[in-house]
Length: 107
Image (cartoon, rainbow, N blue to C red; front, side, top):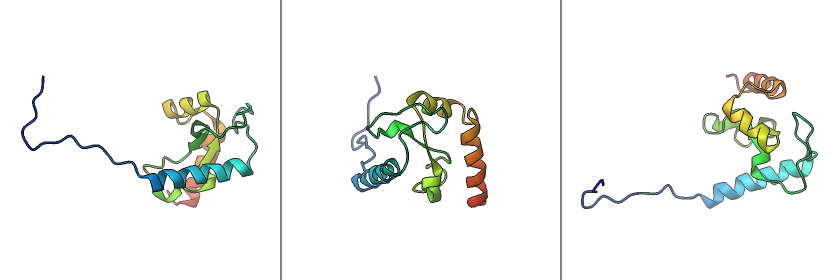
């Protein structure tokens, strides 16, 4: 068992509600403009806009400038989204869009 020294308190990363709301609104805006199908396979995603359907092509952690760029989002099924995180080069449509975004952001 690890003991903590006095005065040491485990800190939690605070949840930024404003940021979460902004991302939710961003996703809802995209959902209202696009068909509810995977942009890779054509699989119907249903009527509810689950966050797992929205994939940032350029990682939002590395490319803050593209975090809220609609061109940086592709709609994917749950399995496709997981596949993208395990192999970012798996789908040609994602790769094509990534190359366009690299040009746009001069990466």
